[in-house]
Length: 266
Image 1 (cartoon, rainbow, N blue to C red):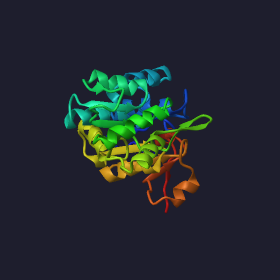
Image 2 (image 1 turned 60 degrees about the horizontal axis):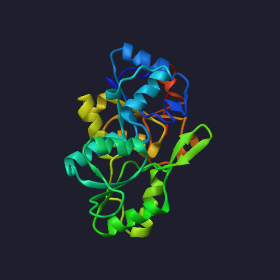
Image 3 (image 1 turned 90 degrees about the horizontal axis):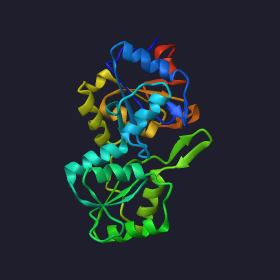
């Protein structure tokens, strides 16, 4: 039976809606059907390498018309969290330009050395260097707080994947002996609260759909949402069987939300 019983649907992006620049099967049709039925649709990503506007533009170009306010990603949540925690603070970011631009636009002082840094932010960074690691090391040893956008080990791509923020976090933890203090992306309750603030719905009326058990499904379950795992990204059936985190539903792709759905039996 199609899963059209929920008031809101929250979709992960990489590995759930698309891989690289290609939509996954049934993605556009599913979103169109859900919107026509009156359900709220929100896109949720741990990937900080695009802004909300850039994600909306990508989805629109792929055939899913989307506005920036329908997208939440870890850089947006990081900005919100830092604004509440220490507005205007001096920060050192190990991350790519979209994250840096959003933080600068929000009034934070982006450092290029360790002097006076209050927060070190670890993120997905394909320009990571030893120099960046040295600055993070110096800043944290001088008292800076160590936080991160997301805990993902890798980001799915059509050719396999790219090392993600967990690799950066691990490098900093290894040399400083300081564990990361806060991670704002899925499965963090900080990300879940951002979703709740936007949707303004009881969690049991929401379905979280994603391809990662340890982030998408774990966050949804902890927040009291129903959860659906799609097998188009980071998780296969063997990993599902072995995991302590189990979804309410398993689907081959998001297209099954409006078609034949397999209920998890375990």
